[in-house]
Image 1 (tube, one colour):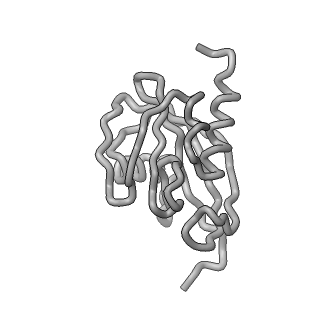
Image 2 (cartoon, one colour):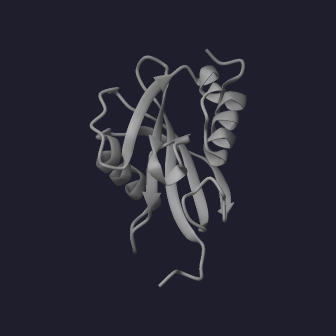
Length: 140
């Protein structure tokens, strides 16, 4: 039975040691690119959920996790079925760029942050990357 409440999720735009950021493609977003993440388990702290999802989906350990933004996805036509999500998004870093994908990840890429918008991103990820680019302007 479908939940009649919004589903909270966590995700992050992660920067690797090269300065590039990770984007992934999944079937759930109809081939659009996004960031790893997923649902929070009952009683699980947000950052613990984020670290777990990254371990499960791409095999990365995260550091320097910082809150980025809360976004709402209400019946987004880019998602494979009608859902109401609350996307709790973070910026983070990884000391590795070696990806071990699970079955959800069909493709991945480490890209320069300013090149990421040229990919067919889902709406949530596009907003997250725009926020990242705005927050890093003037920083080296």
